[in-house]
Length: 112
Image 1 (cartoon, rainbow, N blue to C red):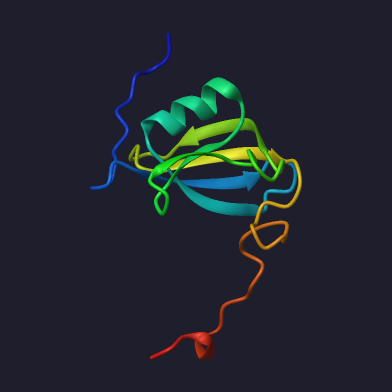
Image 2 (cartoon, rainbow, N blue to C red):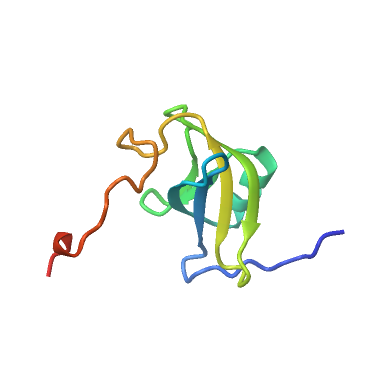
């Protein structure tokens, strides 16, 4: 029998979920999950989030077809962040890029 844990949620009832390519190790995206999204992700084998802007559950790839197939999931030592290693079924970013971290950040890019 595995250890039972209590997820440590933020004030909005969410926790960050880092999605990593299971094959390459590339960080694909960051999303937020509520307990229901965590359970659906583990139960269905596909990544689910809670959309903060739409205030609803979001099945990644439901409309685009670019689903994320779960290969492994882990919780951090404080129970307040999730890491999902997944196989992407197409571009992950809504811009069409393979991941959401395609822009390099430099100091001069920041506004005052």
